[in-house]
Figure: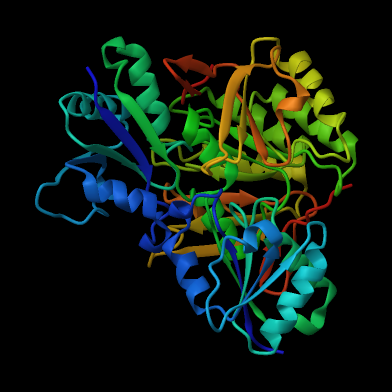
Amino acid sequence: MSGVLTVVGLGPGNDALITPEVTAALAKATDVVGYIPYVKRIPVREGLTLHATDNRVELERAVHALEMAAAGRQVVVVSSGDPGVFAMASAVFETLEKNPAFGSIQIEIMPGVTAMLAAAARVGAPLGHDFCAINLSDNLKPWATVERRLRLAAQADFAMALYNPRSAARPHQFARVLDILREECGPDRLIVFARAVTTPEERITVMSVTEADADMADMRTVVLVGNAATRRVGPYLYTPRHAE
Amino acid sequence: MSGVLTVVGLGPGNDALITPEVTAALAKATDVVGYIPYVKRIPVREGLTLHATDNRVELERAVHALEMAAAGRQVVVVSSGDPGVFAMASAVFETLEKNPAFGSIQIEIMPGVTAMLAAAARVGAPLGHDFCAINLSDNLKPWATVERRLRLAAQADFAMALYNPRSAARPHQFARVLDILREECGPDRLIVFARAVTTPEERITVMSVTEADADMADMRTVVLVGNAATRRVGPYLYTPRHAE
């Protein structure tokens, strides 16, 4: 089976953040595959079939996309943000590994502006020094691993971007994350809740971890945590380039 | 002093990765300010003055940009990649903090595709699970801090993106980084050297840390290091979404 499968990032929400490379790939596509809210962002046109599926079916979605690519269709899998950051690219390679029959399909990944970079830009430069990105969902890893990484990240004095901070299925875990941050980073550490960043529903709030409450995050929120030196200057938040 | 200063990311090198938002800002600019190789990427046109300066003068560059913005010019500061990741955004806020007279200038940051995301996309999805970004330059922090962060990142089992791995001024440090990675991550850990990614000079190599040599990196290289589960599938490299 030959064919080409393209996996693209649509950026955080505003179409002005979609790269021309991705726009060109979408213009040539016969089939667009992805999670419902991301596929909704693609304009309907003649010759293009949209395949929108629910969350948590990433592997089935990848199989479907690879099958259509093998059949000679021009298939584009869409992710929000960057496809390589907690999104579809890894699921496609996992599917490729499990299904050697897809081995000769060429996979092309097109990067995008991931949520943490857009959120950081909206408040200033909180990721201006060494930082890490942690997916707080425990769908795919034990919760103990999440807690351990948070503590090591704090000890390394990384600024942090926390993806998928909260869902209806696990309302208590983000409260636990805030407790860990207060314990490891002290009460004054700055935290940013960036919801639906760059969309009309955008809502961004900056405060100390002491003031933060678990209800401030939902699945459309990316949370940024400063390092020990992150500070406010006027209405902005930034992390200095230098460190002790 | 009022005025607006825009700080943008040009992406890793290929113009097809510049966001339309950034393209629009550049089209309105009267002055573009930045490090020589980034300013070279901006087409000359009537009404636009290019101000290219050498490396390591980030704060002088920021003062100059803020002064022109205060004088009513439409100033765009250009960075490679994303301006908030080891680039000019943080230097602009540092300058703002040191010069309260610039306090009423509005700063707008426009995100971009940072090098690690473009490099990851070229090889597959090596940053598909929790990861960190570390600037290996010790211009702005003690070398001991770099070493400590590398060890904690390895202990957290983060995939890693290492920016500014090597310069002529510090040829021995990257060899030391490779030693630390072998020690903390074992001999088989996968490493990617991505040089001049998305440009005509792009060169990407994947190997184990045992096979890696310090000469494989220079200042145009971003280095990616897998986590314990990062593996090859066909010609690709990916990190599974799940973890133990």
